Image 1 (cartoon, rainbow, N blue to C red):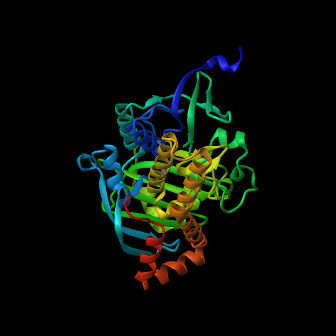
Image 2: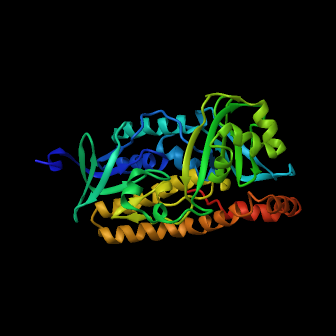
Image 3: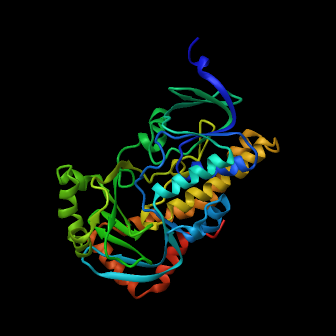
Length: 383
């Protein structure tokens, strides 16, 4: 009978990808009384390449989802440190600040909340395609197909579906905005628990901040050319390139790595993306990525889930049509995040080149208003 024989279950909303945006969206919609299925290719809990810092604008929202942040062993971060390649350092109060928590803990906790709220969470389930029939959607997997009135894509920075659909950021030529490699470790080290540091090196930058227990997240972004020049060896690149910054050289020599092999991801793109593709609402990194040095990607993902939930609710109540839902979501998303993304791309250009980074640090040290302005332009208010 072909693929239609697999279509067994009907949902109001099918969400592909169980990261922050997908989980948060599923919880909100289930709390509104909708039947929701969330499909995740991994099995919780699992690690992700992520800086694991969340700005305070998300605190109330996460608690509203049911996450008991006050009772969790997480760090509160109130200070920022930025170092140039030559070792010059800028330190600045970080307002309103943020907190550190690993995706291993956070995503798993949100998954438990989602299940308790009634979400059908399907782990170890890779989605092969999402097809719009003109009236509803069929989300195809190898095990089973799912029919839904609304489909959402929360499948991260770059997925098999992005490639299958030939989304614009996948097909354009490699450039300074779309050919990055991300690397993450969990480490133990001596570093202030209330500070997040951003250490620059040639064609990249490395962040470190405390997460739960006595662990720190160390995550860096580098142009792929750095890895190629190091013979595709991450340790060689860390020694030859990252080690040019004296703060990173000291950090890498003294830290204790909690898990031996680093997590990596390649072909990270900061090019513009569409918020709706093939009638599927995109949330999280699938809709657009802010440069990690802004430290606000996780809050953007959470906020976008709230924007999507609002329009989906109106559509499922038949108060607006599908086209209006898509247009309103895209408009609100751009209204909230377009300027942040543009500012993030601009700030990114200040880092990675030795003379430019060194000059910027020198200017910023004597101009705290400039630093406050840049922070305010890449962050939002509580939502």
